[in-house]
Length: 162
Image: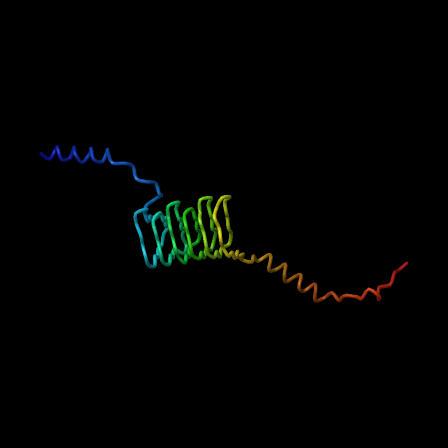
């Protein structure tokens, strides 16, 4: 009696279709195609959206992907964002925003870098931020101090030496 139940369990496991590979489950969460969410989403992991979301999305420190079937109306805060579906709203990313050829985006983007593939539908205001590096700051300081030391001489006061 118990032996048959164990055999059934084994056959069910063997016949189970493979799970979709979204990386380690602890690393990424999926909002599937049949899911619709209204409200704020906050998370401490990467997020993939294939469904419909209306509301704020906050995954600071992580990657947000709006899949080809995703439809999102949102204010987004994330490290990196990849858009392959439809997004209406604003994106604030510390890193890169990637807009693929199948994307339809309308809104504002604030990021360190932006990648847009040919064929993407993009209607956006864009602000690319660049963190000043120490060497650039030192160069600017050096240039400013040299400018202060140099005094321009009017052209009519220059004499030719022979």
